[in-house]
Image (cartoon, rainbow, N blue to C red; front, side, top):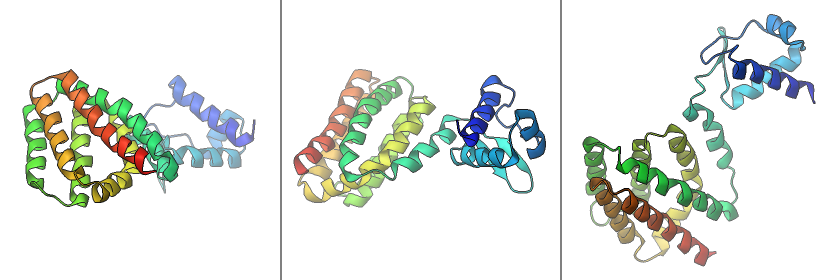
Amino acid sequence: MAVTDEAIEKIKGMIVSGALRPGDRLPKESELAAELGLSRNSLREAVRALSLIRILDVRQGDGTYVTSLDPQVLLEAMSFVVDFHRDDTVLEFLAVRRILEPAATAMAAGRIGGDELDALQARLDALGPSPSVEDLVASDLEFHRGIVAASGNSVLCSLLDGLSGPTTRARIWRGLTQKDAVARTLTEHRAILGALRDRDAEAARAWATVHIASVEQWLRTSL
């Protein structure tokens, strides 16, 4: 094992064992290196690597801390990585979204509050009957983000937020090239919202699946 990898594993072991907890400040570099039996250079590289994936937070002049380790924080690294996706993997991202988002939408049906439903309705009403494709896609992202947040599962929320980026361009292109894409999207959004108001988890799941599958099907025929 490379010395940097060994250093990473040892710091990870301290966090997993509870020796270091979320928000804790790491000991001074010289002390921690001696405690773990590492060189200061390998420890420094490990800290740098763990800060990139949001395990550690290096604060200039203050020290190095364990982050909150919340899913939203840890999965930011995934969002960064998926930005480098290739165009030919967009269908794979859509397939994963089609698996996860309907489940999150069904979960939201039993948890979403009246104020949240009203906010979703206001977002749809603000678009009007013939929004621009860009406005529709921006609203689409916020519409689904609000629903997934209402599921109460922060891991699902962070995963889907990270997966939404790679499919944005496909959704814009569909809106520009498919004749009824805007009207269909608005209809599907209203159907999803109606199912949520009715607390009908299976209808909400079904409409969310239809909504994502329609983009997926269009993309398959366009490639």
